[in-house]
Image 1 (spheres, rainbow over the protein chains, first blue to last red):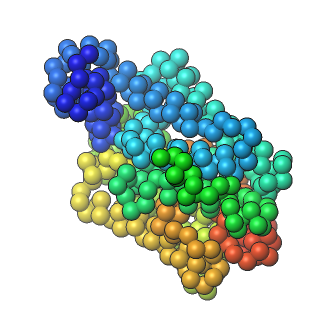
Image 2 (tube, each protein chain N blue to C red; image 1 turned 60 degrees about the vertical axis):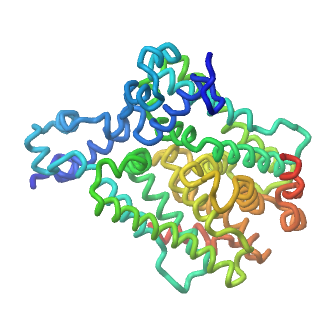
Image 3 (spheres, rainbow over the protein chains, first blue to last red; image 1 turned 90 degrees about the vertical axis):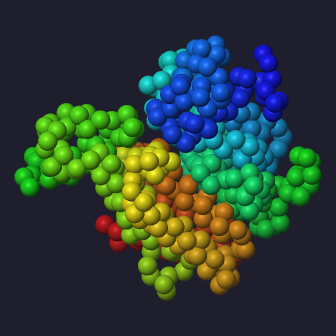
Length: 218
Length: 218
């Protein structure tokens, strides 16, 4: 597979261009001809990489869903607040790195059963369930241990996922605040609302020093 | 204008049916023929009520945008926490009352410049700005008065709007929790995170007794 001048493989470039077109015009409003023209390939070459338009969309979906599951914090010894903060930070950094991918994911969500096979839909739904259950379970773990106030973990998990994932609407890589800073703001607001212990709440609602965490992440 | 058996005017019924179709198939994927067929009118009659498909979409948008602005709490003597709670409650009750309208609003958002006139887009954008600025200003007011911790009101306003408006994805009128209950959960989580005063925070984060408020709203 030959490389393009920007270092992406042809397939990666095709995916990137298609993602931008789907984000701007919608999947339904974008034809394979538009993709071929925008990427500067003939249509036969496009079909060599993706046998159908829906396979491009599925590639976008699968990448985004796998990324989100990968962002789940997997250290079982971490406190609930640390777990939520790390997940939020990874998620927002990921969204900021490819806002169009997140936009396509959310914009086309209601219609994927029209374009995807049952197996494809089941794969995506399974990942979404994993993410929701993880966030709910972390909140439940915090409640059970006394770290958090009692609350409806189901409703708060859905709300918090909406708050973080919905940021693709306005999160920009070159914006006024970095994705890390926004993650710290979101996590602090939620966690200050959940944490019982007044000292923890006032002094380290994220469970860690944010400056240290940003250094460690670099 | 003749009334239908369910008490809606023909125009209201047409709008309701079109909203459901747009929510399920997307605006782009729904033809005026589909709307006419689903509502049981001939196409000429549909065009009598709406001269174009985009005017139906604009009616959905304008109604939703006006409703959201109308949900802003207008009592300047209320505390910041009460203001946020009342806005959240009105908004979630409104979304639960017409989930499809909210779905169309969000799903078609990225593409409205394709379908609407500049004046129509400007009207919608102005309402969205009003809502964002109201939430941001309420948080700023709470910070200035010492009611809230210092925080990035811009980021939190965007996050909180995403959390509340994004609930159309899973909020159902007949769900396990009512819209009022979900509003209380969301507001409590955010406000416990913002309120400085430990007694207020622990005892009345919403600024009012929720049971009283629900009685008053009935």
